[in-house]
Amino acid sequence: MPAVPSGSEHTGGGGLPGAIAGALATPRLGGLGALALLLLVLPFVLPNSYFFEVAILVALNAIVCVGLNLLIGYAGQISLGHAAFYALGGYGSAILAARWGCPVWLSMPGAVAAVGLLAWLVGRPTLRLKGHYLAMATLGLGVIVSIVLANEDRWTGGPDGMTVPPLVLFGHALQGERLWYAIIGAGLWLTVWFALNLIDSPLGRALRALHGSEVAAETVGIDSGRWKLRVFVQSALIAATAGALTAHYAGFITPAKSSFLHSVELVIMVVFGGMASIWGAVVGAAVLTMLPQFLTVLKDYEMMVFGAVLIATMVFFPRGIVPTLARLVGRG
View 1: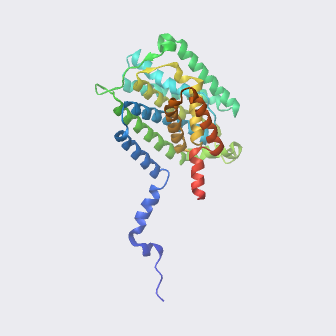
View 2: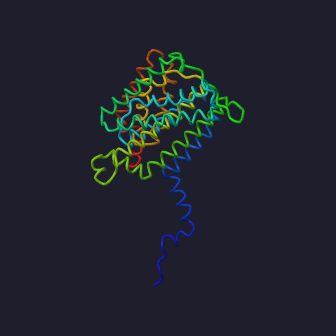
View 3: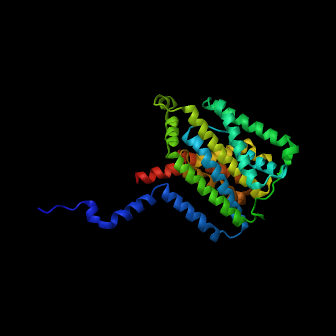
């Protein structure tokens, strides 16, 4: 009796195309490819500089939210003062460049490194707290940073803010919305790539275990304090990088970047898009950044409609937009 050919023999060379198609369908490769394609296509369809500015703001908020989602969604640690790291990254680079004459290509990484050190110093004691105690501690940090930035006018310009020198590379100042769109779009892609790889690493698995049950994670040998501190510092570094880019792109920065309201906006973006979802953070930042631009036509009813959209989303998409839609698609 002749042998029945196996599946691989029967398909011949179809195995490789199938494997490639399967890889492209994964959230990592397929999602990164779709994001890269979107970032490449957008400059050809955006009609004017205003839309470029909105796209840049979306990308900056998405960068911060991806890092914040690593802390909130995966590690389960609430931060209500994340805007402080964002503002310190911008102010640190601005002060080093404007007050001390440091080249911008050195002031930006220097400021980000200093914010990372601050996050490490702050995180060691505060991350021992849990639940609303941790939220209150991070809220206190944000309030302190906001007060310092507003009162130290000799360094920060006070409540009115300060002018930030342009980003200069090879003797040329980087200006124009299209160039900054390319820089910040590349930064967003790299941030998403980093986050997707991180959550599939031993650190990501440790964070998911901590989020499920910290006690159970510690019984299998996971050092909860070490891993929580590490992701806290990484999240602060991402926020500081976005803050430095924002400052040099806008050419101006004010203490409002460190306000409690800004921290709450970032948390809402993460929850709206979907916690423990990298793509949810990107979608949440995109929707909630663009939505107020469209609601301006409503004038006095803008905030009312905005609040209604948030309530409806939480009622019909309790896990956030992306996880809920993914679950529905999976059932279908």
